[in-house]
Length: 164
Image (cartoon, rainbow, N blue to C red; front, side):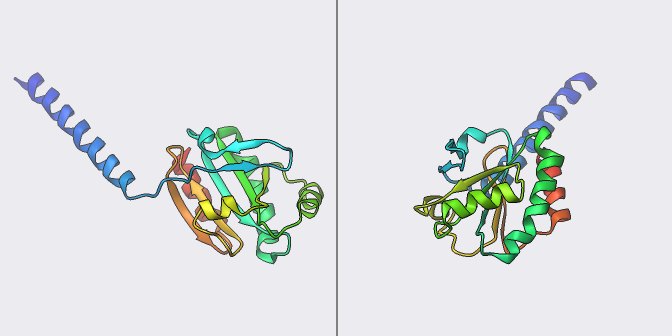
């Protein structure tokens, strides 16, 4: 009798746990279906990064807050990339590609830099107009964080650790 009760109890626990997880996920918006054009010429659909945590940050070469975040993004990339984190920094449509490329080289940025020359990525993420704007996307492609302005590096690390 105890074995049967244990099996039923485990089954109910699994059912309730799965239901709670599904309910929590249902309230989170899905990442948009968009493709990034990187400065290396790569076309990178966001949905191909399913299974990885992804930071998408919208920035501009003329944005002081964005420049302040670059060393922190480099640190995050170096710390978490081998564990499955990807970072895509999307330059705003008003940034000249040659300036974006020069800055990426000058700052020795190791993560992917995308050019959003037509503003399609910004539109896909809710018509982003202000920088920096950062999104943290889960391996299941839900938006876990949407931050306008500079992010708190330690708080972001905590969220990344939960996703990896």
